[in-house]
Image (cartoon, rainbow, N blue to C red; front, side, top):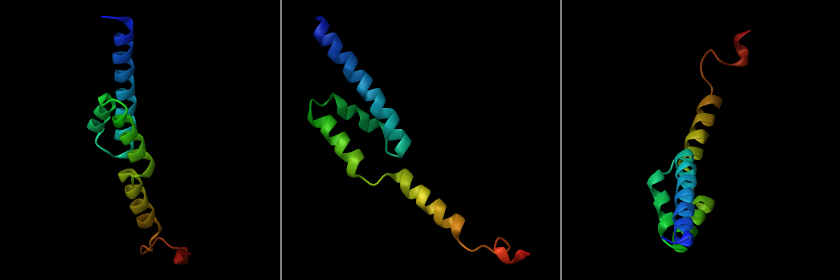
Length: 80
């Protein structure tokens, strides 16, 4: 096996691992990281999806923020 092919395979595996971690942290399925192995188009799809998609993690954080800010009995400033 030539060094160029081996280097390409190792680079693809490294990129897949990086995208796997990024996708799992933002709430998407990490299996989409295998799009890296589709030449040129796969990486473009992943970057566009991450850049312009609505991350499930942000939806969860927004719901948490709204829940924590709502008026709950016994948790206001009027308790004094």
